[in-house]
Length: 594
Image (tube, rainbow, N blue to C red):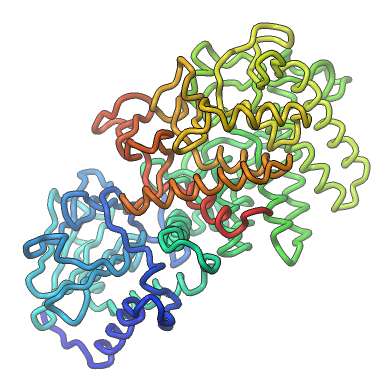
């Protein structure tokens, strides 16, 4: 099957590429994306999928891929893991000049052709591409529902890969239709996204500016279109391997999404509210499938307040819905997670000593932290910080909504939790917040990142804040890539997920806490190191990662995740193109201080 490529299409394609390769000092083309800020770093393991911002997606029948490390290719996470492999002439990948490497489009220039190599998603289950002469595409591994079709256009090749759960016959029929897709129009459409998102501030380091564009690409790819029972667009930490919507990750996603599209940020939070039960409980994992039976850190009121105050329109309907949902969630937590059991019906929520324990390590969001090596039944510093913050955010919301009595009640509840944490969870001798087995019992002496969360929540007194700051900038925590999730000199430290590596969301909360207490230099330094780590490893790997080696040496894909890497298991590698890392990077770069 042969088709003619029109002069108009050829001109359009050349125009797209020219807008990317203009000298750095020249103005960008109509795409609004200059070469120096284009996300164009290729590496293995980059998440590659169709975004719910562009059309219909499917959680129930996903067609998601990751780039291969040993050449240009896409490994699809389907029943038989088929690989769509692009065979390049010698010297292989070195023969390509990367123009765009986003999470749904790859564009690379070759020296022997006027048109670039292009590979991109055009629908949730369709990948199309155009290959220069001397390049070819093959499907390795195979899958009953996968089909690859090719079409010669002069001495170039246009191809379409399709996956259909109905089987290969249906996939082949769709692939035949996809061969007529205009590659040039696809490139232009995908570049429109980058024209619309915010650009890095003037004089931003080029790699950081490029990483910002990559961060927005990650935010985009991790958006799902509405799919029953979810009636709005929603987000996931990663389209693979986790797939689901999660409670506290969605809260952090909103920080980045509000820079892209404030309506989308509010939809992402609203999608979480939609799974709330009559009791106020919200699952930690949600999807068109079966939701989970545990919850996750209560930070939704904080995230909703961030979105509300960022929104110039001050959406009162969104605020009211957020207030209703989050106060029910916080009430459920305060009733069911008290260290000394649920308060009697005739007593207020803050009755007695308002200290709280997680039901399980997994519910905390930091599931393999050494804090939980002996179980989860202890007064948790992080849960006190989250709940106090939520109470005060609900106070803010109630005041804005003119609910005066509710504002007073939620303020008092936050004050009570804060006072209990200051008295019972603060070790004055060591100058740090620790978990405790009972209000006056033994401290769980793990020097964890959670000890800094009272800075962010507003629990720490000025004197406590100073001592926390001193610990932060000491060798215990101020590593090459701070802040380790467990102090570098703690005997439980290990380069494994929440047992040592640094997390962007933790750094974000500590940065905002430092700012809150007037430690401007330390906040600026931690912000700078966080941005540098994300940008540096993006420049080296092409991905934004789940967590980072606090020593800055081990590449993120080589870090342990709940144990040594085991191919084929759930912990075989860290997750690439992790959504909250991208969101936090964007907010820190664009909003140095809210």
